[in-house]
Image (tube, rainbow over all chains, first blue to last red; front, top):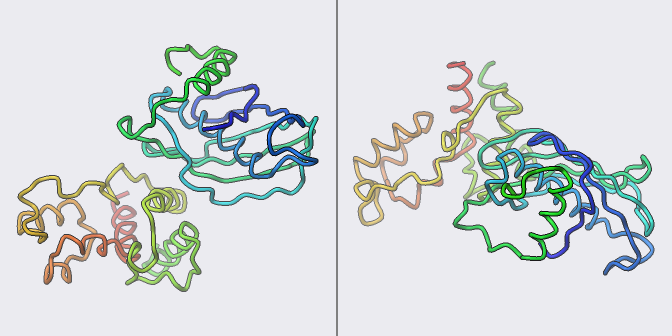
Length: 149
Length: 128
């Protein structure tokens, strides 16, 4: 994961639902007048990844399996706070099916259904230290013990 | 639920998971060879079947990941009698008649047809 697109978690019901926030700034790479829809999707996927892993006590690494559908009815712009709300609709030992909605002040800017898949430990890539640090900070805010993450 | 109803629902599950038209998904079509299913699609199909039929599919029950771990099951690229027996036990819902005629291990993926999924669902529903 090259870019972490979650600024803060608001809520995490392990394996059930996660709510997070992404604030859009003009200083980010690739951000012009509108925030790219692909990054709205990525923010939902990252939220879903943490949600899926939380269901197994953060014991496995996760990757995106597939995006079943994604729509972007409106755009987000610099200065907007994107709220990301992702629910796990079904879970299995191999992965989790998620539905996510991204909104800005109640207006939907992205909706997606996607599949997060767990990687066997031996196939998991070594963690990026910067991303790992960011993830630890995010989890600390949710009072999740650091040794789990 | 009768066979036609099971097929219609399985057809939709597979079509949705693989992004195919429903009429492309017929009983004799192999998921990988004919419908170009990739590994992740098998998990997607599993989710769809659980959702649509309200069944629980244990890990490796429908799509076992490593069928022939025992060396005695395959010799020179051909599934041995022992391997065939194991296959029957592992996949009681598979029609092995054709496969038995030419049991090359490379033909194992072709066993996973839309018809196999229908048989599996029928077996699960009847045991529920």
